[in-house]
Length: 612
Image (cartoon, rainbow, N blue to C red; front, side, top):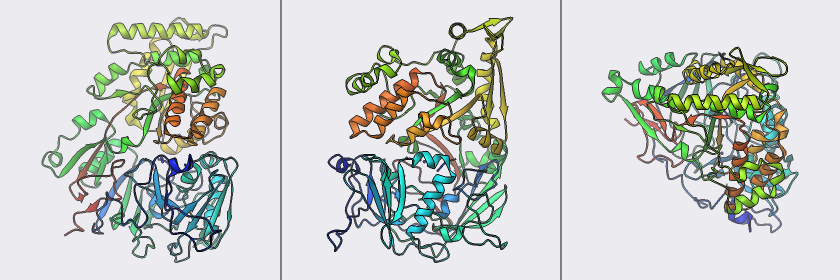
């Protein structure tokens, strides 16, 4: 679902923050219009709009989208419940990302940001015109409230902003965040992503006369400062957002040409096939197809044939992310602690056969935690990457220096048998043996069992061949598919043997790595350390990634981290595509060239009906 698509001297070369007009008082801070974590900002002070928008796009029309499962809360600050889709439409952040730059953001609620050369703090100055939907100004108190509640109520925010020691009001429209370490050049940028919520609204009284409580779920339509408002809610079934005519920020350069639909509706479906039938019948306007086989075979109907439904395969979104999609064993469970067991589980996965039989040979196997980026390791480490690994040689597997990572290759009966024999041999080395066609612990006689937990029945066809292979080597393997709410709760509490996971990496890996793989996150419920990794070598490399001083050092340290993660066999890598496949009814328009790093849907698209 969520949150993401994610330095002078040293800081000037990496952040390259452009300065706003100089203040009248020489002692005042210098505020910049935006942040570029790596490289230079594309847009200069005084720019009119992003290049990828149509500044004259008409406002109007209605967009109908599908959502999966159900929802039971509109409170997205709280890490409980299953939030409704689309709530980001009602909120503004301090900064807004540019979709034609890899890691640049520009002022939204904040007109500028300032920080010292040692990056020990960051100060955001709010726009005087920024207002909530009820007309109340957005204040530093709102920002502080939002930050403190996010860290208090959301474990992901606790980790992401772990080195932000506190926030305080330092001017009429200024809020300053203090850091507990220096040189973490990503912190000002990721603070710009913080969703700002209204303190006075959450501390007020609801329509039932009772005080609101941000520490609880709610289905009361929440208030924001963004371009849309929640117009109606049918709990668990649908939610409707309507464009605000009185939105304070609609003429800002970062918003010109965006937010063009008059209304956006999300309809919820519990079944993938039912949702697609709703799209096919015109109840839903837009469909992102994540199944290669369905993309090839599922559009043999009149509307798709005669052009009323358009189909496109676009690389844009995947230019901005690195992907690891994998089956992830939970090392908090005893049977997965041995690295040889985890490696054996990979030998039982026959990607080539699955690709042939289910996906027409159109998939690519993932072989790196940063698939599709320059941060992917390959071959043997050399140069700066070797130096990074050598600095932690006593903490990382010896094979990272001698053996390139490679997934097992299957695809025919001989290779499949060889791989399963190798899996059995690895299990034996780890103390598990085959007895009466059952894999059992050699000392205790306890059988090896594995339940693969899913939240979507459509994934079953992709994992059942793997489960069958595990059974061939005596493993008591099964699949359990549960509803989204139960799945979320079980994953947050690490209550699973194995799950299907997608980690999306930005083009500037940084603080989030500690939440993905760091020891501190292994025991923190709600973290994204799904595998339960707690390793001193990984921790040391994460710190090197976070504090990399330039692009080349960032690449070397991240490749080293990737190589060590692979060497520990924490996951069974699966597959991913290189394009995003979309289908939509011919009701919409966009510029011929979409943002380089995004499809821009629905932000920069518009309704053809509104243009008439």
